[in-house]
Image (cartoon, rainbow, N blue to C red; front, side, top):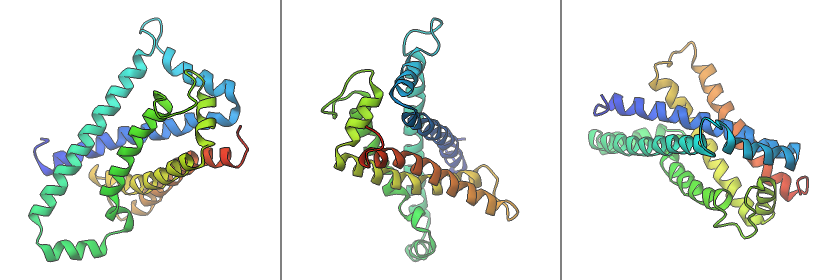
Amino acid sequence: MYRSTIGKKVAMALTGLILVGFVVAHMLGNLKIFTGSQHLNEYGEFLRTVGEPLFPYSALLWIARIVLLGSVVVHIVAATQLTMLDRASRPERYVFHKKQQATYASLTMRWGGLIILLFVIYHILHFTTGAAHGNFIEGDVYHNVVSGFQVWYVSVVYIAAMVALGFHLYHGVWSMFQTLGLNSSKWNGLLRGLSVLTALVVAGGNILIPVAVLAGFLS
């Protein structure tokens, strides 16, 4: 089934659903920073100890990471293949006409995806491994986040990446609804509104943290 165009679209939609669920949950977890260092650090430790003693330390966290990595790979491969198929099947004049009609979000979907991929790599090096963090303390999530965002240009990078994520989420969630057969004149207004809301909540919630650090509300 995957070899067909619809199969690739379904693969993109399902992996997109997994990734959307992750970014929403991740954003909600990040917002625990506003409850204080103890709560955030306890949450970070919970993610590593959940499942014990049935599962070893960090086992479920690594399983989740592997599932997410697999979803990212399938999502990128399917998106690339669909783009190539679309280019091969459409005349140049038609492609230009479609681009003129497309929204800004859909036009930037490809580049936005690349920006997000590069950002995720940096984010892992910055907050997960600490390799790109000059003041990293293992296990002290609150300290790592606050000290990381106190570097203004790091905050700017994160804010810009979240703007790109917002556009990507809006178009991606809307496309996911259509691919899963929820496209109808009766529900389109609601579904488009839900797509906008998802993008604004996730991007806005994540942007709130570096802004709060730079403004001195978190220290």
